[in-house]
Image (cartoon, rainbow, N blue to C red):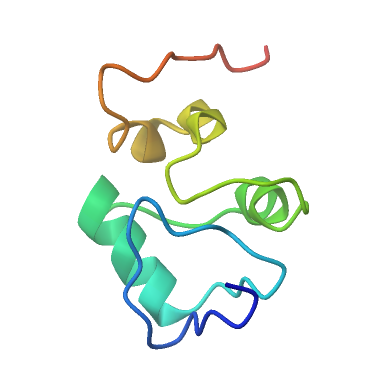
Length: 83
């Protein structure tokens, strides 16, 4: 999946965030569709997305953001945001 095209390929909750990750309009559409039209990227979230640790578009650590948290099913354990 290293050659995933973030501009045009279908993004799902299971899509791995790879080294080729880019914050494209396609990614923004995905998050807006999943989280709501109010979704916006911020620098810490973008840095976290690109930190190189294995994750998918539904990694539980995303729940530190209230807008992204809405896409997590109730079965995914919630983590507390740091103070």
